Image (cartoon, rainbow, N blue to C red; front, side):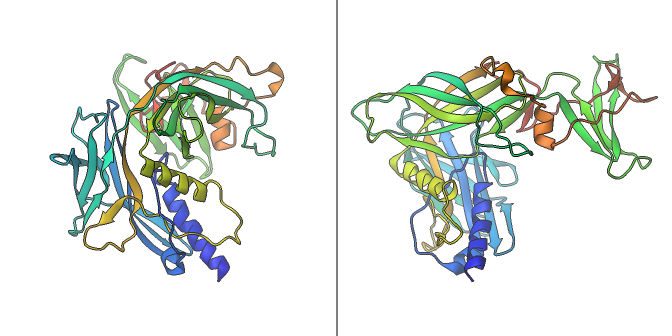
Amino acid sequence: MGRKQNSGWKSVKSILFLLGSWLLFQGCVSQYDADVQLSANLVVVNGIITDQAGTQTIALSRARSSADSSATTPIQRAVVELIINGSTIVSLREVQPGEYQCPEGFVGKIGATYQLKFRTEEGTAYQSSVETMLPVPGIVRAYDTYNSQGPKTTADALPTPVNEIYVDFQDPAGERNFYLWRWRLYETQQWCATCEQGRYVVQDIGPLGSGPLTVLGCVRDTTLSTRNLYDYPCRGLCWDIFYNQDIDVFADSYTNGQLQMGHKVASVPIYQLNKASISIDQLSLSANAYRYYKLFANQTQHTGTLADSPPAPLAGNVRNLADATENVVGYFSAASVSTVHYRIGRTNVPSSAGRFQGLFYAVHGRMPNLELSRNGGQVFGGIPSAVCITSRTRTDQVPPGW
């Protein structure tokens, strides 16, 4: 029975941990209930309003878990609103299943209060607590050091060297401050497509290499083995984007008003010697939001043994207006953001550090298998190549700080 309970908690926890690139969950401690763990059906709220220019979104989903499986589904067609300063109502529209976006140009303001309200298609109404956007000090500087003993290992169990990224900032005196960090890493990517039992096809209308393109992508070729893999280099510049997976929070309880030096925000594995770029966000938090993120981090990033009694799923600051006993997971918050863009030159990596096999090998665990030029194929630069398609994890635009 103990093994089954722990398996159920792992399923619930894996759902919660994978809901975002960085997690927006908080909880209050409650008594462990095996029935909750092994038959979870949880509403999950993931969203933070900031004073940064750009898209502001709230994600709503439902997490279902049993002892043997787990799944998440978006909550679609909900009516979602922000209440600003207790009176102004801003309606959000659904731009993707379960993803609700503020109007174009919307930006949060320091000192304003924000509250989230939404009603599901079935008519269930939810409401968050009121969050105040607090100011955040700027990042004074960012820098990196080389460490040959990173936390990750290669396939042969050897440690992967890392660039450890640090920030310094001046904590304001005479007030309690709570911080959260998140980052986006941009690494050069030279390979833009992989086709299994197929060939990558781009219709180049011309002139060759400069005209408009129609991307057909991987087109099946039954003359090839079902396990045949062809990899295609990028036609132009391309970067893969990686996001932090851990929750990184800090309270100035014992260092109020001091210059904070050497706060490590990331350990970036060195898979290639190409330069990289990292964008670091430093966010302000309310005291309640800090406690939430801290508790969730402790229970997901610093777990004990399988013999430990698992806690109940973590409830956040959103509640069902008709049923106070429903355990709604996630935390809606508002935060001011200070951002710094830092170039990782990798000039501090010693020549004796070893052999770096590249980002492709790190991701796929093998070397690329290049398709040779083919008759009648759309050829760019002498070999078939692929387009860098922009997504959340890839861009063809020069990254900030590059």
